Length: 442
Image 1 (cartoon, rainbow, N blue to C red):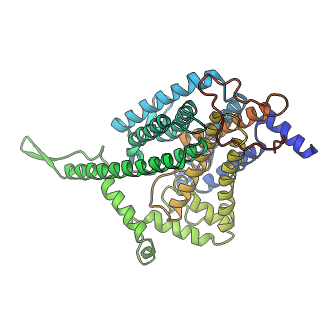
Image 2 (cartoon, rainbow, N blue to C red):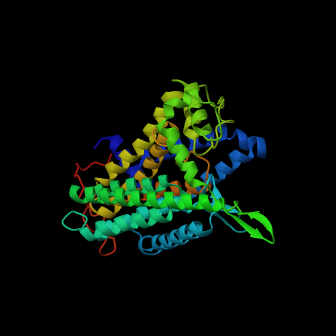
Image 3 (cartoon, rainbow, N blue to C red):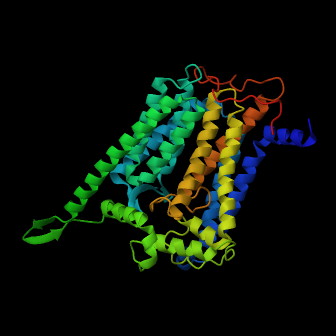
């Protein structure tokens, strides 16, 4: 064994996969630099230092989660049988509460504020984490001849549909993202192509039905806003403060997306400002960018520090820098796939690929929205966009990935080659996607 491989193996045993650590730390540095650079509006309102302080505080809290989770073995029974189910329950309650009485954020009913500390929480971010852990548990529990059983596929699809239905007011993008994550987990879980195609067909049908229902519901809300009530002989308009015209907004976004090439001939208005200023930022950046802190559009582009931060990244560090950021996220997914194929048991493989898919697919969705491949929607860039819930959830996902990689590195080297020997009964099924490699962890 070479000294390089030996050193790498020792680092993986002690801390988790070094490449995942490197990607995480690089994203944290980008987050601090780019979120501050894109926060010119917040600087004008709150002062020079407050925006960067808030971002750093969330990143530090996230780093604590990363370190703590990386030191806990993924197969810890307290984690698998107590903490994760509690997360499911909390997420479901939070999603239902937001669906009924949530706060409107950026045109969608998607958040609530924790009293006393005043922290705004978006349950849709927690739902992604909860869904990954739930699907990993269900698929590991329902393995049959190196395949996910029909029952496992059915229950998993039902979980995705349930979370998707509860997140529908938070934006359709989150539901589509959840479907993409589950599809990746089905592949790693060993689901046969026929079953996978059936699941995708079901997703398409259910998604279509949800779209029709939501469209009709939004139209009904729009009509209700036009109704007036007569009280005491006076005409009183219906209160609009708690309603959101999602129907008109969604139609406008899809129209602009389908006619994106025509935007060059339009003037900037409230309906197309995100697309227009995003295009300007990317064009201004060119190949090499205008330099960190030299963004011209950050003060004009709505939500430049969150939903459109990738456009600011392209403006400041150019196409080359943007490709580097894309590679970081894809690299994270590839490392997860490499570790997943070395897992003897399916549960850790599903956990690490699910967490990586959650982060990478969300990043790709964000980039697709920024560059016009997808219609306008709200999707933060993991770890880089401003937003407490998103940063903390991504940090937890990174911590779980490091936990799996560290546990597997310890248990698949030396004499102990069974990483499922401590898993609870029923969760220790063999990994159908395992690809044995030579006795090297690198």
